[in-house]
Length: 257
Picture (cartoon, rainbow, N blue to C red):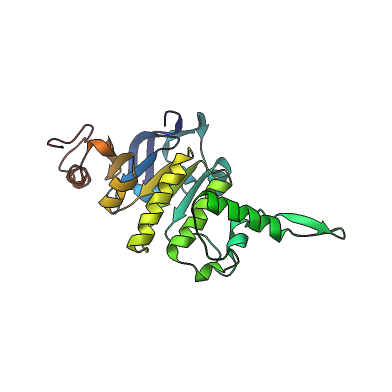
């Protein structure tokens, strides 16, 4: 976790007279999981959209893999290996797992000179990718609409990893999942990070943040109110950063045992 993947340098975002973000600066290393916390309206989702290409910053710079980076559309972000996974996901529910995995990247073979889908090769590739990640799906030919929320999320994350993703942004990914599905989702995030992929997760649930994150960054009223290793702070200290009862949170919380 030593190689820097993403650097944000004094990122600001204005919506007319409203300044949603100002002087946001931090970095993320390969294989690092960062929990982005803050109250509603703090600017977390706006920041994630800027990183992914859904919004353009009003000022400031970003660097990705050592090169200055600026995406004006999510497609440009994806081309760099940056993608956002939302709680409602982006899967097509009326087709099966294999079709979703290869959406836009279908393999073909020629039959009497006519290109046809190479279903067997695609299914074998998906089966291996899911097995390598420890993801179990009853049948790869099951339409996604019949899968659980946790299974759908696993497919999307595995698809991202398989196609060379480098930084995944998770915006409240477990909001609609049960306890067991959330537990598996958190385990999958650690598996994704173990492959050298950077992860930013937005969550309102403190327990999830401390369960999965290497570092916790708190955004309050558009600025970084705290940036601390998860092992060097406590939920109470983070809540104080979120509410404004403390201003820096730069070191270990007092009284932490």
